[in-house]
Amino acid sequence: MIEKAMKQWLDCKQAEKEATYQRKLAEKELEKIVKIPDEGSETIKTASFKLTVKQSVTRKIDERKARQIFNEMPEGLTPINWIETAKLDLVGYRWLKENEPGLFKIFSDCITEKKGKANFNVEEIR
Image: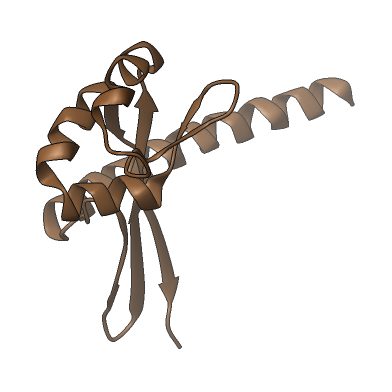
């Protein structure tokens, strides 16, 4: 009985690996076909399907650099909430980027951006 369950587990694990491989191939094809947003989500509808693609961006603060440039920034225009460690105020960050490009250039030296993996969700429409 236990061997049957272990065999079933191994078979399922192998099927899961193959399904994951096939899904990743399909995602690579979708990435070639659809426009991936820089950040956020986009939805595409066809007669039979709805595709939602989401793109996240991870941002990290170099706290040492942020402390060095903090006094160069006008009060209230530094999109950081100081707690025990620095946490990026994303709304303020985006505002500064759009409205104060010169200050943003100074500030952005302490930020590292890394795009996350695009996520896909496909639904059949009936």
